Each structure stands twice: as structure tokens, then as C-alpha cells.
Amino acid sequence: MEHQIKRDTVAMNGDEAVAFAVKQCDVDVVAAYPITPQTIIVEKFSEYVANGEVQTQYVCTESEHSAMTACLAAAAAGARTFTASASAGLALMHEMLFVTSGSRVPVVMAVANRALSAPLNIHGDHSDAMAERDSGWIQIYVENAQEAYDSIIQAFKIAEDTTISIPLMVCLDGFTISHTLERVDILPDDLVKHYVGERGYPMVLTHEGKTVPFKLDPANPMTMGPNALQNYYFEFKRQQEEAMKHALKRIREINSEYAKISGRGYGNGLVDKYQLDDAEIAIVVLGSTAGTLKVIVDQLRQEGIKAGVLRIRSFRPFPVEDVIHALKDVKAVAVMDKSMSPGGLGAAVFSEVRNALYDSKQRPILVNYIFGLGGRDNSPRDLRKVYEDLLHIARTGQAEKAVNYLGLRE
Image (cartoon, rainbow, N blue to C red; front, side):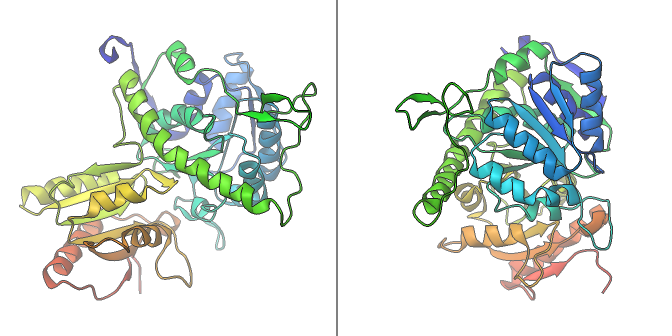
């Protein structure tokens, strides 16, 4: 089937690829506020609206907090809803991110990852999304513009699945992906529309004893996000955790389903392994850095060094079993973080990976490398040094420091 599907190849940056995917997904409402390096997404989509290419209600709000509030309301009323943000804009949404996930409405958001002030910095790191890792949103991190396009299409299928019904953010590295022109293979509009389908709704029992779709409807009144004190709040949160467990399964399934119509899959949807089957040393990373690491691994392999890369695609829900399985035979692992957790032992990805491996009988020596903050570039030479450090750790069986800083003036 996949060989019969017509595909067009176009040149797009990551932001444009996101906007085009949203255009194809038959979205009802987009509410947004511009912020660098996300602005191109909503700017481009507003052109589609103005040109009559989509039948979407576009709401230009006065702030990101208002944008997420509008998305929450639209999604609660049954609309397929999208927004995009970054950095301080995502931080301004903080309250409403929790309200949106707690209300169990499947908003999809693209985040063009960018550093947070102060000092002011407009370039890409993962500080913004990592600050929201416990907000109850699914988080998928992409490697390039093609994956940004594909992941937005998958995102609506995942978030709107009636066993999940929680919001999802697709994270793309600011400027590195958002503003870099790349080849993107796009699917036909009608195929994407058919694949995504119409939004489904969980069925719930109302106070009137009716079983109805979970959406705000005057004909079937219900309350979303009610006041829940000591008696019930805990149970609401527990249900969100169960939805995340369902998401682990559906992300894998949807990645496989999408590969059949597009010819493209990203590992098993949760993690993307590269040269890991016999690897003795490996790096774990999110986002675009994985592409450069794969080139370095190829070079190391030619030199007889058994190196690999594990790219975590789904940071929330975190794929514990997949990480354990992928790293079980590796001797030394470096987890690379584009964010910091001041006062903690290492940063967010390191903490998750270390936690996942803690109970494993056979686990690698694990070290953390914090890198790229504020968009600082790390050359292939810098990244190769991490593998050289891992070779030394694997030979000696010990690491001098648990947390390291790559490319930092000290």
C-alpha cells in the first residue's frame, strides 16, 4: 500500500512543517500568541485561514495564558484544537497547562523549545518544556522537520484516543529545527484527513443518569474541572496516570500504523535506537542532537568502536521498560541534557534514566552531560569527546564525576 501512495517532496523549515500538518488535520480552532522561535507556525497557519484553505476558527489572543484558556474551552466544547508556544510563553501558560490536562481535553501544542530568562536568550534549549514535565501533558521530542510534520499528525490520533484524552506537546528544537530549511515528504490532504479521522469522545454518565459524550453540551449539562477537595482530588490525578499508561501503548501502535501509510517510523514510537544491539558505550539524548550523534557513531564504528545512540522520543510518558531493555548490555552511558535542574543531582533526562535503571541487576555506569544551554553550539568534536570519555569509563569501570558540563568555560 505504501508504494502506491503519492507523496510530494517540499522544502520547509520545522515551523512551516508543523503548520502544514495542522492544516491537513482538519482542525476546528487555533488560539495562539506569537513568540520566537514559534511565531512562524501560527503566522503561516493564519495565512491558510485568511486564504480560505482551512475552515478553522483562528483566535489571536492577548497572551499565551489566554491562548491556552481559549484552547481549553474550545476542546471542552468538542472542537479539535491546536496552539503553539515557546519559552516565556509556555511558562505563562503554566497554570492553564495543569487545568487543561486535569480537565482531560486533548489539545495539541507545538513547542519550539527555547531558553528561559534571565538573562534574556531567544535560542534553543529544553528548559521550557522540562519545567512543565509534571503538568500532565504527553511530551514528544522530534529530531528534524520531517519528524515534526509526522508527529503533529500522529499527535491528534494519540491525544484524542478515548482511552487517553489528555493534551500533547510536540517539541522541536528552537532554530535548529524551527528555522532550518529541510526536505519534508508530505502526504496527500485527503489521506491525512482520513487517517486522523473525526475526534472521538469518551462516554460518561451525567448527573441526570444519561450516558453521553464527554463534552460541554447544553442538551446534556455536565461539569468539567469541578471543585474537588480532599475526598476526590487524589482520584482525579490517579486517573491521569492511568491515561499515561494507555498512551505508552497507543504511541507505539500509532507509530506503526503511520509507518504503513507514510513509509516512515521512528523507532518503536517511544525510543529510537541506533547501533545499540552490540554497543558497549552509548549516549541517551532528546531532539536534533541525535542526528549529529548518529554520524559520529558511524565514524566510531569504522574505527572498531562499538558505540550507539538512544534517542528518547516520548519523554512523557517515560518509556521505562524500553530504556532498560535498550541499555541492558551497555557498559557506560552518557545522558545528555539541554536543561538544568539547579540544586539537583543532574538534569531531568538523567534523573529519569537513572531512576529507570536503578533496580536493574545489570546496569551501565551512568554519567550526565549538560550541554547546549541558551543554544550554545556543540561541534561534532565536542560530542565525540563524550564517547572518548565513555571509553575510558568502560575500561576503568568508574566515572570521576556524575555530572559534567560540555562546552562550558570554567
